Amino acid sequence: MSGPLGQDPALMPSLTSASVACGFHAGDPGVMRATVALARQHRVAVGAHPGFRDTAGFGRLERAATPSEVEDLVTYQIGALAAIASVQGVRLQHVKPHGALYNMAARDAALADAVARATAAVDESLILFGLPGSQLIQAGGRAGLRTACEAFADRAYAANGALVSRDQAGAVIQDPDTVVHRAVAMVRDQEVTAIDGTRIALEVDTICVHGDTPGAAELARRIRRALEAAGVEVVAIGTIAASE
Image 1 (cartoon, rainbow, N blue to C red):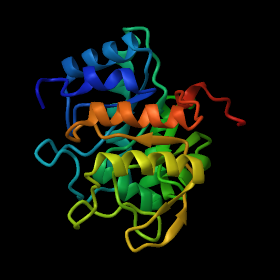
Image 2 (cartoon, one colour):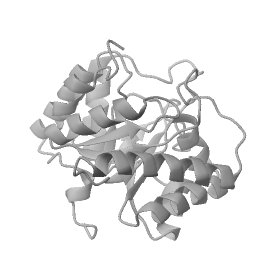
Image 3 (cartoon, rainbow, N blue to C red):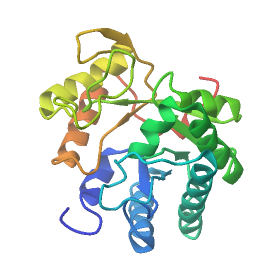
Image 4 (cartoon, helix red, strand yellow):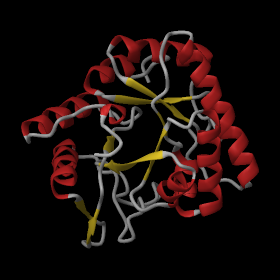
């Protein structure tokens, strides 16, 4: 990263929603404050991006955690960002667990329920992001939360709809042209080709662009431009009526 906000200043104009690290895997109070201010300036919706306390591994290393521990760490991080946002006149739109926590909660119902309980306890209007068909999406429904199914244009999928682990070859798609094409195809066709060639259905409400991906700002700009050229209205998920 080139500075405390990394690529955020260049990324923000292409986004509709920003998931902000809450100090455990990245960021600190000052960075959180500055990121929220930047999002507000560009009229980008803000969401909490809670993860494990793991700055060395950027929150991408799985670790043992009980549902109670997960509920506490998610509550703490959402609350911290919500307070920092509130003093700037910003209300959080969503919660998206980060890295290892996201993937673990996607397949573990107990952890997913812990994330959903924490989210609902802080603010029942928050939208919970998760992989389509994952335990996170199901837990959000059980907790009475609105949910949003998330797609990853730069990540390979397994045949069961899970993301391929980053420690496997081909897990991260590096070619920008391929990533842009996949993003449009995911939204248009509501499906994706898994790493083994299987075509799987994929409900898509929102597309993730990782802020630490080299060239992320240009990639986000190209994805948004391509979606709009394909006739897709690109708006923050919170601005869409829940019944749609």
